[in-house]
Figure (cartoon, one colour):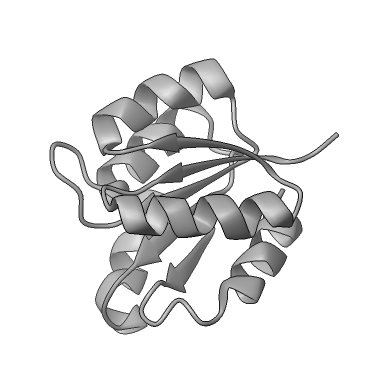
Length: 120
């Protein structure tokens, strides 16, 4: 049974790229465009791993991560961020993220696949 991954990002280009790349890796995927939609999808899709963008309108990835931790502390969460790791690492850890992944450049998507496989 394929691992279920919820990708939460407000950028259509990023969602489209991850749909292709993560789909080819064999994951069952669902997508949300913002943190509010993500909370609904988490309940209905019940993902094994959640990949969260940090900066989104409404509710950001750090907030969703924190809320998800309160509901199910064992559900793996990956904070998917722009900028430097140092900038988000402390916030992500405090929110309950299991890992962080820089989307800048998007050249290391194979590492994201490995990270999902490790966590799920």
